Image (cartoon, rainbow over all chains, first blue to last red):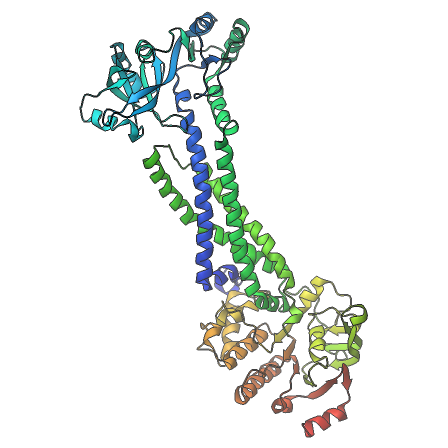
Length: 390
Length: 247
């Protein structure tokens, strides 16, 4: 098409209208950004909660996990006899089994001598039990008595252990009145239930947690032979074992942990409600702005109707305005949320991470929020009567 | 853009606007009040008609009916050969596209420039970009606003705003122009200028003008003057009396 026969480009009325009213535009952008930041934060906390809660689970080096029949979550465990784990080792397809002891024990901050509960993981130092680089590299040092591996990125209440260790200092402190020495560092994020972890050998664990009996374990890790049918092994174990223990895949173990936090604690609900409230706040702000915008321009809209514009044209203008506002508010909202994620991560060590799925989800929510507000605001358009303008 | 079939202007017997036995009421039940009584009026193509009469006499109601802005309740009204009695909402909307409106208040879109306000009228017409630009510039030059094209209405005087509104009404080359007190908000000089521009452009385009006004200074521009009183069209001799002896 040559320039001479090109159809006239339509005027971008919605944008021209928004652009002319800077104050209104800024308020709208601020309001939508605020709603987006709130939504991102709620989802960020919720995501951090769940991803941190299952870091331990996902680190286990085995396809199957054995737990007491009464265990619910990492902070709600029950013990079972390790004999059950060795029974399971007899099932065809199993390569090896490994017991894990878990318990909160009292860690004395070597700097100010305060006592804080730390979550101790007791593993067999001869086995590769956890796929965590720091644990794998240092586990053989745990053969020595009274040695521990400390949690990189744990909260500062425990003392600046990681920094001091990395600078070559030898760190000794007291656990349950035993002198222990830090032999290495590993990384696991704190969760909403656990402030920090500590990894030690099963033998050392029972010395530090002298209230625990050897042979009563918390988690059993079961590694299968390559090519073994996971479901078949699982079925065979369930047949052979009494129901005081349960066996599940590692993924189901992680899912059960998430389900526990989501359904059996107020945490999941709280954050979901936060998202809903942010959505409503945003919708009300957009509605207020679009409603007053439509009201202010009612004579103009009536004029357009009198000129022969269809109602549909005006509806599209208002919906376009709502989507422009959504897009303009979303960008600063996302950037601010990224900043707050970073700050929260530094302050709390929670793994606050943005992922593309969440960005898309919040954008869709913002668009729905704005256009549903527009849908209510356009009802006012019906009152633009072209017969009234003469 | 209009989906109406080609208007049979060629038939000389067909008036541009034709109404017979037109009645109109406002309100419901016991508050129902008749505002137009048995109006019969034919307006020919190219005619410039001025309608006068005291306020509340039904002039504006008649204008909104002719402009397809209000539904016809009783009687017949056809514009450009299309009957508006029992017309659908869509038919009424499409009928408006053949009419240029000039209002007492200019009713410009404040967030658009002069150029864009005029351009709005072409949004519902099928024109090429080049033709649209030429027409907008020509009409703005004709109303003397060629150096105000990128101004916003808030930066214009009352007369300039009204001239923009006239440019907007004329740019789509409508066959009918309906104007309601276009000079009411203007001083004597700019009021006269505005109407003269309207008349000149309308004569060039051969369009019919119906002008409602109280302004005796512009009556001489009319081909015909009609007068409304209490919802009735009064006869020609009575109108002459008013014109010759304004109260």
